[in-house]
Length: 338
Image 1 (cartoon, rainbow, N blue to C red):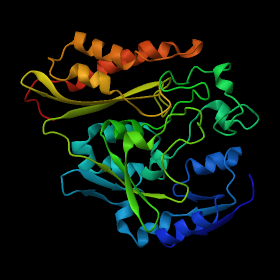
Image 2 (cartoon, rainbow, N blue to C red):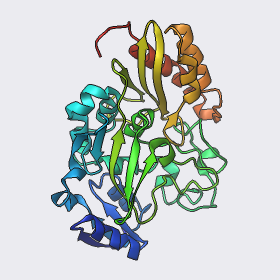
Image 3 (cartoon, rainbow, N blue to C red):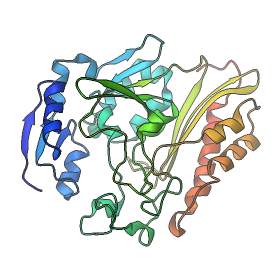
């Protein structure tokens, strides 16, 4: 690991001042991703700024609160465990709580923060192995070793010639499905970015994964109110049950009224280079009576643009089946309790 200096920020502005003055500096909260990357040599900041104490001066950073329009605001330093267990999340956004609980072991959930979870890097083996020279995420323009190498876990949606790495977060999939937003601050100004716009497709610049600017900090995320009676689920398929990254996952939220789907949100994980919202599949479902045939049609639409490689073609069929199962879970009879 490269030598680095360490300091604790006392407030948001002091943390941002360090970032503005030193492009090689990095923030750390729970450290469950940042420290891993530093040990591997993938990340090598010369200055590490600990922001875990910021909540002492700004309690909003670790609180889950109802918003004026009956949505929910989650502070960026809230741990995954605290968010998953909060009644506002558990009762109104079941698939968010499920995604958080399925995303890591209890020990990691107790340390990892909501803001850090959104910024975690891919688990592509070639990205995390610095002995591999061809990785456009680490060394822009060097190539993509996964395309001709081991790519069983790689993406089939949103890929480019430059990158086929999957996005690793479970929570981010439910967050995008929920049409959440990210609150970003420079210390003097705040902006709000829709969740789906926050995560970027690789294109020709896979090293840039999110819309956060170099000297910005996530202060919170926000989830909008869902229609009354909506149900949601997060279905995760993985090689082993205990805290493995998703082969495919589905975040689905649906409202059924009068025997027809009146509202739906659907996003996929484990199959794309970013959390993958499938608006086309949602449109197939709207106004229709739930049925196995309808779910199969929506699944076909969701995966119609898939571009699998030889080793991960199975993900297309697996994801379609996961979509059908997730939709069958949430499209229940009218009047059934949430």
